[in-house]
Length: 251
Image 1 (cartoon, helix red, strand yellow):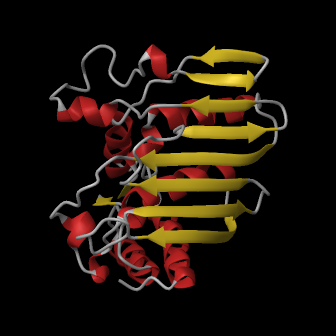
Image 2 (cartoon, one colour; image 1 turned 30 degrees about the vertical axis):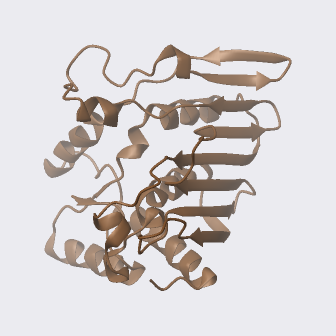
């Protein structure tokens, strides 16, 4: 099990996939955000077709960290995959592809806003999926006020969801995933479905990071596939590489 983004380049990712296959070893990628409450809720709404045909999805991981850290994300050299695009962008790109299918084309803006950081801290990617849906993905460390976590527009209705999945904050606070209420979104953060003149509050599907590990267990026992196909991570790396190349980012 390797943390996202799996590798620093698509080619390195492909080599890992081939090496694992040749040796008969399990290989999966820790794309834990597939088990976020907000993502699971949106996935459920799409399966129920309450949004209709989605023409635009806005997705954000925005934070307010005006001072760069001394850690890997802000200070590592380019060959170690630093920056917010490799970090949070890996999640947002993966989620968008899982929801709306393969990428047809992409446009990117990759910026370094804070003095003292060596890597991007404020980036944006616009993906056009083969399905015709457009995903606009924001990731930032310099957002004094964040936008909606999801804003999804379909030809039947829209869905707007604010706030972040609670599981990471709960883990940092020492709470155990086995406790009652794990992964449940605060009611104040439940999303709104419909149109401006007819909105319905949608209870969030509880997030469940433990499910990732249950699927890893089953994959090791040979009774189920891995929870995240490493080929999906290679696809994410291809999008990141194309974005960096198109914007001239080399460090």
